[in-house]
Image (tube, rainbow, N blue to C red; front, side):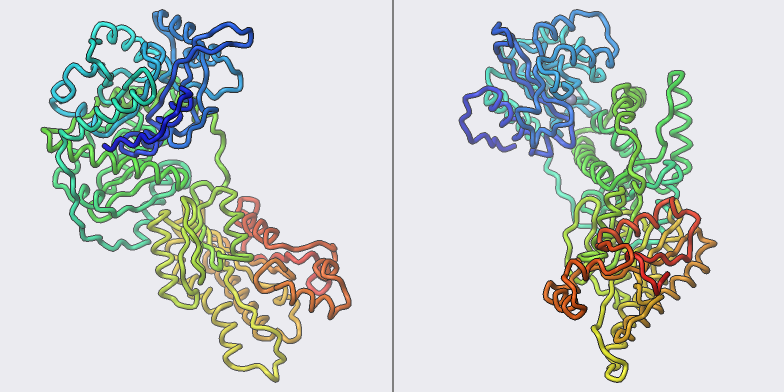
Length: 638
Ligand code: ZN
């Protein structure tokens, strides 16, 4: 591992921030949590009295982006006094840590704070380095062989007060003049030094030593089988039913995942346990190998019932990682981000398992230790604090015309309520964890097929469809109407939606909570205007299509509704010049023209987006086949 220190920093806390960021930006050391750092300093308190303070990473901060404010300052003498207590439940320990703070507004100190406090050195750096964990997760661990007397080795104890107590006893007995670090079996590495630079150099030195003992890892490119989106959506429905809520299911066919799922001994190596117990929160104790969700849930329930202390509530028993030699890896989470984190962690797990197998055999902790971690009171408290998720959490919407205007506003409104969105548009849009941008032409059925396939591979299924892509061919009286203009309006505004409907239905009917469809039509359907024959007729056609879909799909639990917006001026159709021209035509100012409706209000894309999201919500659970105007009130429509 490369030593990337390239700065001179005199302030000890700034230097610790710098070292923390170096560790945090290296996924082989710190991945989605799993690392913390500290520095001990003598600073005057408010009375001017010199106070020994431990600045330790606060929870809620990532090492990669931590700042000074991310470190919680605690009274060191108080922390060391706590270590003389015989035993302490972890919730009581966390309370004591908060009470030892010098700043009431500081973040909660790391749960590993007492480990930092007991080490005498000014700077302590802790990571869950893959290479070190590999050496500890072996049939015959190689920690002593590789590190000799340079590290103190501590057997596995669950993080929290008990681990700090164990280290407080063992560290002074085992430390020698050559000691520069401490290895916690099945957990990670601590290094320490007189300053951040020294502790960092030692961290990299020890990790490099560990890496040198590992064989190089090269995954061959694999054949990637095609999977029917309907099969994936059906699997997601089963997983969501097991979880008791809609889940995001992401398919991964990276080289490591495909090679690992191709192993003959997959069912054995993959079910020995995670690389380090804190992964359990993200990946559960073991992945599901194959597709027997019911069997996995039954095993999970049985283990819980045999081992849970009285009063404990079972977490949802759905797997978070599925390994299957046709699918590759599926990672699962309540939100797309959770599924992505589970994937990241499991790719590192694969690398650790592969290398450990080459070193004589991968071995993880016994199931009981993993169970204790999964049901740790501090993790349970965190889950309770997180509160109720947004209403569309775990659900997926496909929105056409998502790059701008009403389509984009619909995508934004759905994401704001927790949905992940597949955005289809002629214009490319950037993907994020909860948004997949797919470039495509809605009038091309193959583009729609691709969007559905890519969307289902990314998120697992489709629960909502918003047909928003459309064209307004301009004002043409019927006598001048050209055939191409008519055909184009019908193609984009109506035929493409018919094609989308027929392709998406097999996936939509597998939505865990029932599919929902919203078609963005127009005020021109109930109240057509002269000069808009092609537009009005195409929007009327798509409205009729939606009404028939509402009839045909009700039995599948799919609701189909239509919105009729009017005079939405913040879209690409309406340039400031066109707007000024139209206003002048009516002898109005632009502001007056924009509010030319009964309520005297402005109808924006965001207004339409909110209505569309609401139509997808439970507020409209008993409504299908409806047409809702969003036009500020229009005498001809009313
Ligand atoms: Zn740790």
